[in-house]
Image (cartoon, rainbow, N blue to C red; front, side):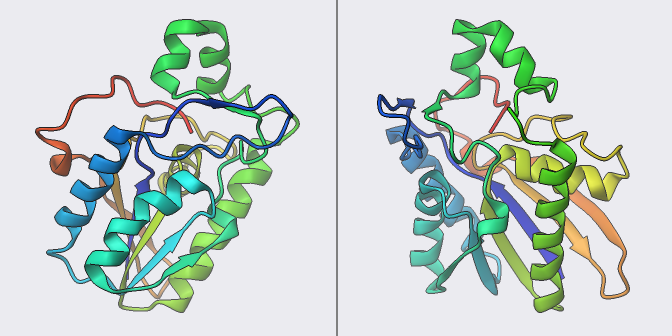
Length: 207
């Protein structure tokens, strides 16, 4: 089967004043990216769509759900590690305004009390469960930068917890073939052909 890991589209910057989770919606550009993604993938047979419950992922999946007529399956195990954070700043903006914080996250030191190995193990277990339930099918999983990195790192055999080694762009498509015998292989990383003609968002690190 084929797994399409899609990072969510560009969200708005949100910082709450009461400590509640930020959970930002998509920006205007993010909605355009999500529509472009749906148009791009509408030419491929899609058998199932899973999405993180975080708003930026669910809104990214909405145009694809509409285009395919499939129901999005909300899947907790592909949430990002910052799901309870009271702030979300797009990473290219964070790099400009707080380089030290950006560097912390890019080097895997910005996850608070979370162990990146534990986070990665949860992500891998969830995606493997999706793969096992969908033999010989093509499944889209709309998720987050840390989630994409976590699974791809496992497939590539990188050290456990090394989950910030590449920069998946907003709405990038990252394809993995999952054989029933257990082999996993990368087909592509950071597909962005559907974003041609849209404004650039800058460097696309982060969550």
